[in-house]
Length: 310
Image 1 (cartoon, rainbow, N blue to C red):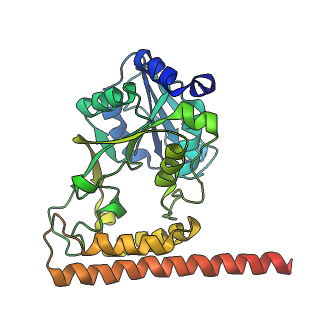
Image 2: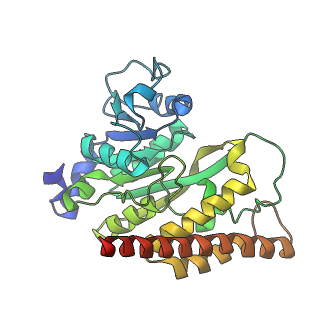
Image 3: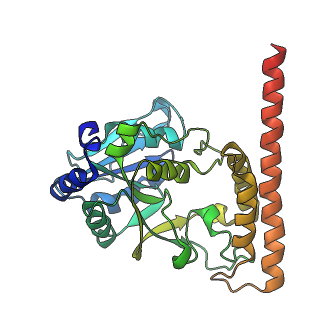
């Protein structure tokens, strides 16, 4: 893989035409969600592989894990030593995948065969980053007044096709290029149990683009993100926004993130919320992000003081 990534771009593109295999990775610490990976397994070709990275301690893994998946040699289950976080699992998949392209699919996402084939075509054309439209499937038909659309990114779904960009819930990346350049997912930005850090995917993609990867978002196909009822709660979304602020501070992008969060929340969305509601939500969620950013500043300051006193 490293040899291939070191080739000139034209040569790498030629190699991809003949290497149509895709590696898929599903990282999970929720065994009950593993059934969603069946949608990926069913779409595998002979040259493909599916890596299931289990982010739990061995004693936490229920018996028969993976029984829902087909008994294929190209389906591999990788056991982490414990709950090490989403970024750790993604990096492990990068290390062991056998194909040029690695497609990350969240454990609560399902994809169709048509979506997989559209990703395959785009990657074989030489695109280094491929995303698809992420659409939500809510279990409850009840409309939540605090979900106008501007908060959908907290759930890992797009609410406008014209402004969509590749996100980690379903994205293909040039794993060979990442390996050759030493590009990895930042573990301080990846979720770990109840710590809802974010931005490891977009930070990784930015570094991959800087290394020469092209990017494309496919809006004619989609992946379905299944939203659990607890993630629809206002308390969860505000906690998610608070962690977003902490993550943006770690990325040194808090100020620009606050502007982006404001534009998202006050913009129009699928719920067609009123002007007053959109601006109320804007104040609410931007405040949560700002408080999270301030918390990160204070936490880092206490850490420096503690280190200095030692």
